[in-house]
Amino acid sequence: MELLQTTLCYLEREGQYLMLHRVKKEKDVNRDKWIGVGGKFEPGEDALACVMREVKEETGLTMGAPEARGVVDFYCPPWPAERMHLFTCKDFTGEMQECDEGELAWVDKDKAAELPVWEGDKIFFRLLAQGAPFFHLELYYDGDRLLRAVLDGRDLPL
Image 1 (cartoon, rainbow, N blue to C red):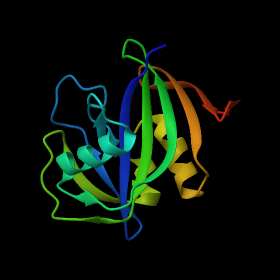
Image 2 (cartoon, helix red, strand yellow):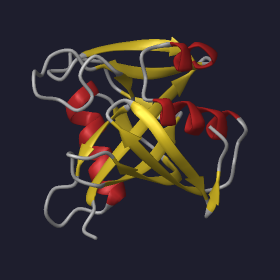
Image 3 (cartoon, rainbow, N blue to C red):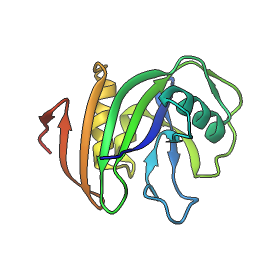
C-alpha cells in the first residue's frame, strides 16, 4: 500500500511544545485540531529535508538538530493512508512568523493532550515524555474515533 509521506515536529523550549491550531483551511483533515508543524514531502525530499523546510515555512524558525523520534502510520478512510516521520527539536534560531495554516502557540507539554488533538497524538505525547526509543506506531481511525493502536507490532489498550 502506498503511503503519503509527511513529517511532524514539536519544537521544544522551557517545558513547552510549539503547536499549530489548524483553523485557516476549510478542507483540512486536521481542521480545528492542535498539532505540531510539518507537512508533505516534496519530490526528491527525505524526511529530514522535508521537516527542515516545513518548519522554516510554517514558523520562520531554522532548526539546528532535529531528533527523529518515530514513524506513525495513520489509516483514516476516506483520507489516504499516511506515514508521518515524527521529530522533536530543542535547537532552533530565528524570529517566529505567522503561519498561513493556523495559529502558532507555545503550550505546556503536560497540557498539550488536553487540547483538541487526535486521540492517537496522546499516545505519542506519552512516548515522547517517557523518552521512548525510536518507535513505530500504527493508528486506525473511523472519523475522529481511534479504533486501534499498534506500537512496535503490539496492540495497545485504548
